[in-house]
Image 1 (cartoon, rainbow over the protein chains, first blue to last red):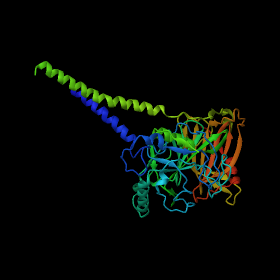
Image 2 (image 1 turned 120 degrees about the vertical axis):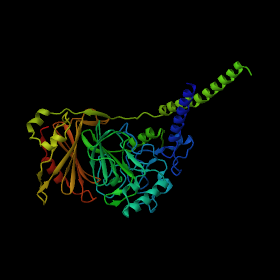
Image 3 (image 1 turned 90 degrees about the vertical axis):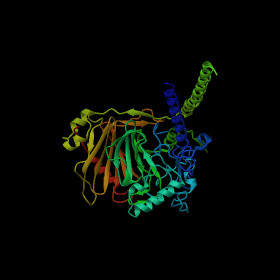
Length: 279
Length: 200
């Protein structure tokens, strides 16, 4: 009996320490992006690590943002779960076509602060009821993982384009942000119809379309893996990132609304951190 | 050493082990509580409002449903009238006609989403009896039927319509190129005019 009690307590402690390690390992917000997976880091990273710039504060000379602090999609989960993820421009930072640098895997691309890209200037003729100008970005872009994983993805991409298996790039899973139904799979998009509320679609772009875990009509639960982070752009490629959109019926009209603060809050919940606003 | 002395040491050792095992467990539970307590509340000035549906009028307008479509709808029926394009829609562009095939539908308690393929675009319909109201709009007075603003989007174009009190977001996603200009406003509105309400 005593031995049994001893065994139960030892197992409970092991479970507790595993949880602590998981919360501070390479698969969590505590991860410093370039540390090897599994390496433990200090707790100071929890409160001090996550920062975000004010909504609408875009990269310099990248357009006119909108200071929309609304959480349009309350209660969503991060599409990356506990994996490191940071909202960043894919056009005006290293690797982007307006940046003058071709290295998309630089460490700074995976570090806080989160920065808004909703309404960022783009070439195509798009408008939004929520942006000041036309020709804008209708979602936010998110980098995930680390420099190391970015380099692994580059190798995987080279392998796949040379005829290798698509699963070579299945490195960073992407998850359903809410319960719902898969309502469309396009050439480089996956749409999720949330089960409740005024939001009509969550749209994920640039996943590995040859390695999806879902099909049209599938019912998914929040947090369920639906596919993998990649650079798919309908036969061509973009930087490795997730473009994430929220489409909602707002005051009677379908609109692209800013996913930025919904994502930041989701990151807080998924990582168990509090993100601090910077000016 | 007597028997009682041995028992005392044995007991004390076990107590010590027990305490050593319990201490980190208590710390673990306390830490978890602290983490969850630190989460900030989500400030929001938005509410979701239901829309009332005029089923009588929808029923009067309804055409006979296709058996294949009926099969895709949940047994409980739809929360909003089922609007879909006909197999062929007349438009004034040079082609004169757009063919639609293979409607695929998913439904839930607030409405449905449909994907209807065409030659160079997919038509997506999101139908809902719910919408978000922002804090600055307290009593929107939208008619049951309206045709909303047309806009170009990432991969195509979209517009919103109201029918029978329900809201329908209609997107045309280009499948032949990445330019997003495969359906212009006039064609989009002509396609919308061709939509039929089908008997659930």
